[in-house]
Length: 109
Image 1 (spheres, rainbow, N blue to C red):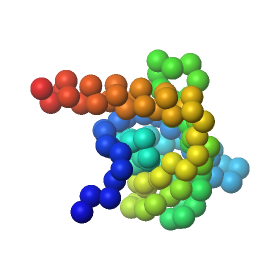
Image 2: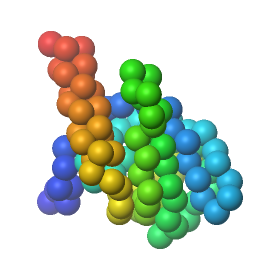
Image 3: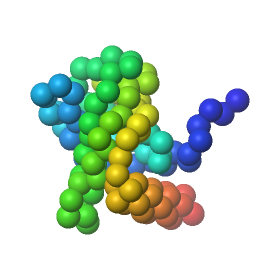
Image 4: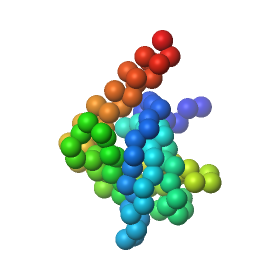
């Protein structure tokens, strides 16, 4: 049974992750409106809340997700569920996902 509410798409987006006072670089490797899979050296545990910024090359300001909760961890990869973000961020995230879908479909055509 599929539990996801939102379509996940492959992505390669630089991310800045913050837990406590540490900010660490990572890479978002897949993305949806509800969460993401991230590769990073940031040490987290399931249930931990982090903030993240998605650094999109064509966009001036990073997409800032104020609260994301770690759902699972495997080596240096973990999944987060987005808990809180502003409407502007949600709109930009939606646009980024649409671009990732178009790119993925073009590569697989």
